[in-house]
Image (cartoon, rainbow, N blue to C red; front, side, top):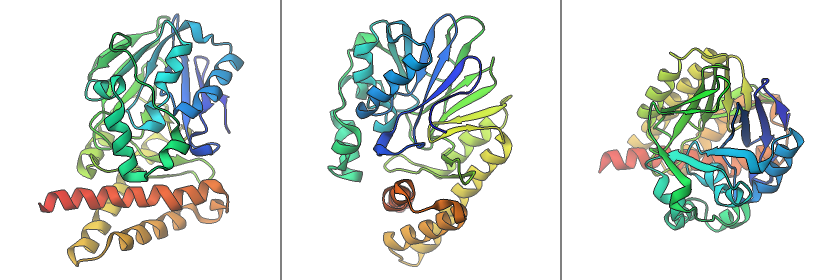
Length: 306
C-alpha cells in the first residue's frame, strides 16, 4: 500500500513511524493552496519530503501543517518539517498549542508511558515559534481554494486536544486516532486508547458524531483509506465497549493490568486471524500498542475509583 493517490486532490505518504511500513499515514491535500494532515515524527521528515516531491508538491508552497493531535507520532515532526516549509503555519487544537511551542512536558509524558524508547522511535521534538501556530477550535474552517474547504471537528476521547478534519468536497474524514487503528491486510479496526486522557464514553460519543457526516471514505492516520464507513465506525464503537466491559470486570475482582493486557492481546489475535503474519508490525502491536491500550483503560477506571 505505502504511498498512493486517494482522490484527484488527496495523496497518502507512509511516514514510517516506529520503522514500520503501512502504519502511519500523512496526507497531502491540494486546492489553490496545499496542506498536509499530520507530520509524523521527527524521523519521518525525509520520507514525507520525498513523498511530497514525488507527487509534485513543493515544500516551499505548503500553507498549512494540520495536526490532528499532538502525540509524537502525529505532531512530533512538525518542528522539523516547518523549517522546510517557510510559508506554512501549524494548525493545532487550542488545547495542544502550548505543547507545540514548548514540547518538554509532552516528551516527558510520552517517556512515562514508553520510556527512553521514544528517542529511537520519534527523534528530537523541536519547538515551534508561537507566530507560526494557529490554534483551532470546533467548527472553524480552512479554505484551500478550488472548493477545498476543510472543517475542524473537536474529537475528544482519545485525547482532549484531538481534531478530525472533514473535506466536504471529497466527502472524506481524516480521523487521526479518534476512530482507532485500521489494519489494512486484515480489514479490521482496533482501538488506540493511551493514558492519561483516554475516556471510552467520550470517545464513543465522538465516533457516533461521525456517523452523521456525509462520508465516502475514512482516512486513517493508522493506516490508509476505508470505504466501508458505517461498518468501520460501528466496529470501532463495539471494540471500545468490549474493552471497557473487559477491563471493568477484571478490575472489579481485583485482577491485574497484566491480565487486561493478555485479554486484549487474545482479542487482537482473534481479529487479525491468519493475516497477522509474524513480521515486525504484528510484533510491535502486541508488544507495545496493546499494553498501552490496556494501561489507558486501567488508568480510566483507576481515576474513576478515586
